[in-house]
Structures are given as structure tokens and as C-alpha cells.
Length: 354
Ligand code: SAH
Image (tube, rainbow, N blue to C red):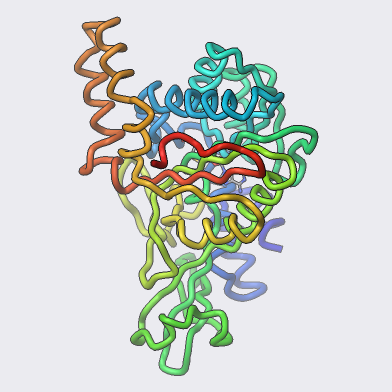
């Protein structure tokens, strides 16, 4: 029902308001899924001129380091035929930079993009001709190992929230009064779904989870266990389950209320690396990290790459230096962002996680 409303005509806020008035409040996950599907269907979300900027849009060095990481691992795996897979490739910048670096090591994989936004698919096609698109991971090829990259993908997937009330933990729902969306406490959930060490948290405490993210990691890990290959997940996150709300809305490089203006702001939540790592391991993959982005890029040699780029182009030296600092600085993306890898049967230890 909500999915049908989200795909219809007119403003998403109006369609969601009508759907909630007719059928009642909806889970936070359905609100977030509908809002982000609409949001990413617009152009200009990502980049300096958009609402937020991501690592590959800051500098070509980010995609190049990831390309070098894949080429190194592939070389040590015996140079098999592989598929390059990217989840939520945005404008296609990371893929273009990584594929260019891989080609220098004679690695020219077929390219598969998991992307739901038609507008972003068109941008990706312009930067990476010949890619094949998928709506989700279930249709990825099964005839060769997969090397998978997901940068700031999992933070965009829908989350559930539960809130501690007087009588137990309630699933959080989104209601609508007039045209205002607001979170409310829904039905009490069975205590078994609440992690044991958090059950006695004070009234008002909130716990997030992302069943959608766990589902994707499980499927990927099972593929890696069967087909071989590796996956690299880079995102901002924590080791949960933990108390606290991380759902946030970003618009024009600033924060907004997540329940205002669905479809017009980017909704994201911090990624629970502990839960995703455990899901990957249970499904048969070997888990590496997570490590801070600063350590991952540092071990791969980003300082050497920055120096080489600055030497080749002295007028850009300042810009390259500040991009390096943004990607690795403790006060920028260096420690908030983390990298975690999954590898499949017979694949070697990936670089960057020592
Ligand atoms: N990786 C890119 C873009 C990050 S933004 C970068 O680093 O710049 C999130 C990306 O995930 C966008 O491409 C968005 O369209 C895509 N996306 C969000 N939800 C998705 C879903 N459920 N299925 C597939 N792609 C999704």
C-alpha cells in the first residue's frame, strides 16, 4: 500500500499523509524507504552542489585506493575472472576511479550496479559504459567470484526503531496529524527481540536496527561463501546493538528534522557494524575489521598517492592536501567512517586490515 502510494502522482508528503489517514500509522522503516526512494530519484542529491558530499566526490584518490585494494586481492587470489559489483554507486565516480586503477593491473571485470534510482542509473551509465543494473542483490550473477563495494550504501537502507515505555518496548510508528508527520509509540514488542543487555534501559530509551541491511549482508556473504570473492563496506557507524537515535536528515549540507518533508531530504542512520559482521560470519564469510577509514586508506598508501598527484600537478597541491585531510583526518571522515571486509572461501587476507 505505502509502496503503491510512494510510486503515485503528486508530492510524496501528500501521498503518505493520505495513506496514513486511510490505513493508520506506518513503521519508521516504511516511512524511510518511501522517503529515500523518492529522494534518490531526484538529481543533485550527491556532490558539492547537492545536499551532501561523499568520499569519492571529494577526491579521485578514494576510488583509486579501492581499485588498488581489489587488484591486489585479485592478484593474490590467482587472477580469476570476476564480476565487479557496486551497491548504490551514486554518480558512478567511485566505480570509474576504481575501474581505471584496476585496468592498470590488467583487471577488467564485468560491472554490475545495484541501484534503484533511474536518475542515478543514467549518471552511472555516463561514467561507466557497459554496466549492468540490478534492483537488488538477488539477481547478481552466480558464475564467478564477486568483488563488491558499498560506500555509504547501508546508511541509506531503512531502519526500525523501538522505544522504551512504562510497560515495555514499543515499535515506533509514524503518524500524521493534518500534514505533520510525527513519531509515536506503537504496539508493545515481545521482549525477546530486545538485546538482553539493553532490556532494563530507562523509559524513553531508543534502539535501532536495520533488518534490510542484515538481509543484504547475509545474501552477499552466502554468495561469497559459494562463489568466492570479497566485499568492502565503508560507512559511518558503531558497534551495537546500542541505545540512541542516529536517524538523521540532511539537506543543503545541514541537518533537518527526519520526519519533515519526506522525499526532499536525505534520510540516513549510522550502520551497526557489529550486527552486520555477525550476520556475514553466520552466513559463511570471513569478516575483517571494521577499522577506521583513516587506518584503511593509510595502510593502502593514500599519503604516497597524494604526494604523487601533487607532484604531477603543483597548482592542485593544496586541493589534494585538503582532500587527503578530509578523507583521513580525525576531525573529518577519518574515524567516524569505518571499513569492514567480507571474504569468501579460499580468498586471501585483504590489505588494509592489519
Ligand atoms: N556510493 C555513492 C552514493 C551513496 S548515496 C557515493 O559514495 O557517492 C546512496 C546510494 O544508494 C545512491 O546511489 C542511492 O540511489 C542508492 N540506494 C539507496 N537505497 C537503495 C536501495 N534500497 N537499493 C538500491 N540502491 C539504493
